[in-house]
Length: 256
Ligand SMILES: C[S@@+](CC[C@H](N)C(=O)[O-])C[C@H]1O[C@@H](n2cnc3c(N)ncnc32)[C@H](O)[C@@H]1O
Image (cartoon, rainbow, N blue to C red):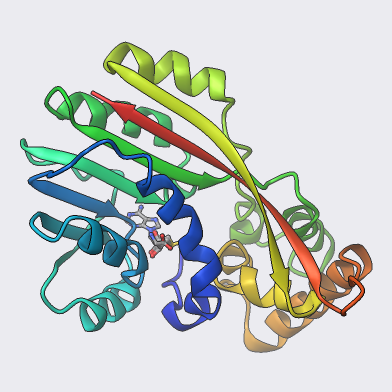
């Protein structure tokens, strides 16, 4: 995937930081020694970890140099490393692995989560949140535009749509044998957006990226115009002109 744009992602920082707050509120650790923020992005989720655990060693990990640059500017005292979650292994002594809005990008993330859990000592916590929104109109329209425009045969565009997440039952069966406690839940947010066009802006910072990055500037504009037209047709303004972006998310908290 092309480098993420930290600036685009942070346009909706308040809304995007609500799920990691909700996830962290459930983490049952008082004073972890080593905490790793997987897919730390521009450091917004790492900052929550630093606020909650000021005494802990906290490491932010990401594969994007642009995101890491922003994260280092934001939290100069924190350690940030460039690595790929697919191959990263936690150090012995890691008490909390926190992954907000990242695991959905790794198709084999269930096996990765199991491996990470097994690498932790008893009491270690794996806390994960992922968008579970592939059936929402905003994601369906990305697939539809990808399948119908002049770009439809581009191999990267064909590969761009994210798979549906596995069911909670599938995560339970895979992870529970490696944990003493597991909590799996969904929260559906209804984010207030200034206008339907803001939904396009939101996803330009996340799931539209794999569709847009293979395209040249003119095709990107065409893709975004076709996408926004569908969004405007489906997300109707409320009495004050604003629209609600329905956003289901899956949370998994597993204690080794
Ligand atoms: C949606 S952002 C999440 C940022 C932040 N954790 C938050 O709570 O808002 C996802 C981040 O995961 C990173 N990422 C995606 N795939 C990755 C991988 N395989 N290894 C490491 N980081 C990855 C991206 O670069 C991006 O910064």
